[in-house]
Length: 384
Image (cartoon, rainbow, N blue to C red; front, side):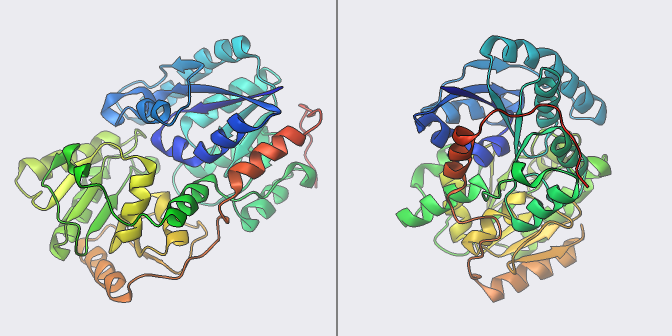
């Protein structure tokens, strides 16, 4: 049995790899090893570990590596803590391959620890172009990784241009699209009436048009988060639809956005809004499917929403340059521009589904590829 170790550090990590976890776990030639850490363990970010375990997965190890503060300093320190803790876990679990996800700081810690220990690294979602420091992390991980699972043709071509050998690049699609395809196939358009028993805020009427808002800090614009989220809140309030607001991720600047959300509520401006730390993946997909608009800077507006056909208003630089479908309108952090774009998107209505990031079978392809791999050469050599 080939042991495949996956490190989950956030809610985004989990949704981005869940279908592959399931496929690896069910594959007769593979053994899944699961390490859960960083914000995925913390209640303030929704205790993602509870969702993971409710889905039937078991953690082989837990690693506390998130230093509070959400500043550039603590983000760098958290990466360092991961570098200290993860090698001990990898030494105990002795995986044949470490599978890492995307572009977060815990991805960097996972990659460096495994690479220094001569453990082959498989990387999903490499080769993509975006804003913030995620861009640098993603390409750096590509240069350490031995096996590449890009989500799109453009990303696969870019990985090869970075000097990676074509035989190590497998364009599989995005595992997040797998989850969307499953929900759409079940045709479950309704959202459970008990949704608003969790979180805080008004109980919303979702029978008419409503908005989903998901906005995260941009680490290279540290200190601007409170102003940026306030502009978005003013725009959403101007539109006047019931709004589901998701808490930001733990990147540097998260406290600034959280402060803006708390002030908004304390000032009594949060009528017709409900705030969540976290939502189960299937619930979030069903909400996107029915929402009049998704507003903010989450990659879900680029990936899942494009497959679903959800109208999206993407704000600022966080997703700058990333491939996307016709469903996305880009604006700056300006309340009037955001409100105008939201109104335009509502007039446009639903968009046609686009498969930029896959067809819903990425997880199965990842598991089959890992099972079929022979010996992986850990010495990287650039190609030209």
